[in-house]
Length: 99
Image 1 (spheres, rainbow, N blue to C red):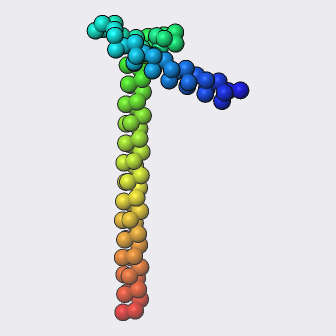
Image 2: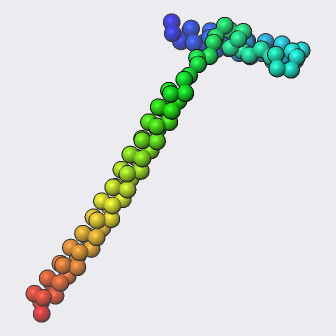
């Protein structure tokens, strides 16, 4: 039943968009009609504090992601360095035992 309801709502949205375009042809400047107004939907007002909280949370998430990427890069570099040191040590041991 949910899929049917979504399809009906999508059709209503398309009809409202079409009707608002036709109505806005003759509307005076600044007094146009939106599809949401025709459907009786009201936009939710968002407080400034809510917006700032969302921005702060996103910036924290970005900082954490950057730090994780830096740590991964650092770990990858240390693994490469350790591999080089191991091969150098192994070649040193081989040279010292054969000499």
